[in-house]
Image 1 (cartoon, rainbow, N blue to C red):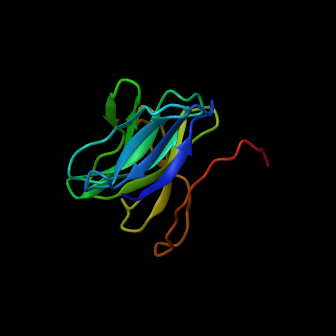
Image 2: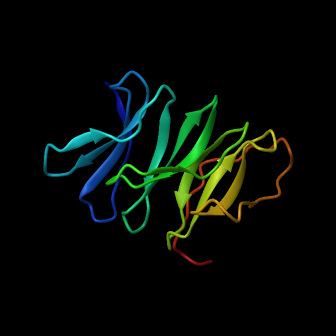
Length: 147
């Protein structure tokens, strides 16, 4: 199996990562310092890009559903999983705001990957950048630093 894309929880006690050990890329949880490990996502579609919320209670990730990647929000301790995006386009690469209220992500809803932001309940979605139509954007990441 290949394990990739690890993300350490803010309290340094939990690790989430992507693994293909089930035959498809899925997200797994590991309690550090123990042998407690389990699969968080299931299904035929792959899951990727897992990131812990700043308070360590939720994870955001992308999962292929109906042929397109969508952003999900999950409580890794209860398994509750909610779609934040839906559509016939890809939404992926989520990154949390430092206060945990918003997520920046990449979406191909215009036909080309662009940066968007939304609240963690999926509302308030808006495009962040105004680059040329054929200019692809990706790899968003927040900083707590003010400029």
